[in-house]
Image (cartoon, rainbow, N blue to C red; front, top):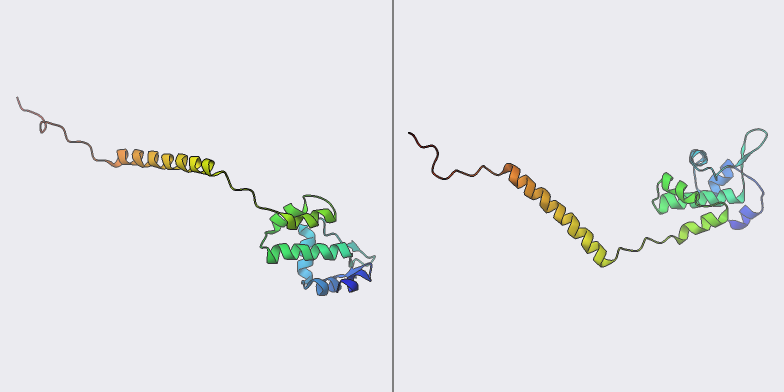
Length: 140
């Protein structure tokens, strides 16, 4: 299939749909969501895609359907740079390093202390008043 893509300079909408297994309405929607996906138009207004557009459609499709990214997240990722380097960098993401264990314990302790303060304040508000010593008033 890669040879088939390389042979032509431009591809029509239906051809791109077949090559990427995508519906035409999906491609038109993605064009409105991703500024990088901007096929040229013929004099008659027909969309004409290049090889880079097909690669971008495949990347968008993978990020959304296989990796589970939202449109906003894919848009953010594609906006990190221009050209093929931006697309190649999408698959080299690594999660942020976990916090140091001692810092995580400090954070947890602060959160638990806050919870205990709230519980103590609530207990004081709902506790019954203490009975007075002596059983009340004395008559005179």
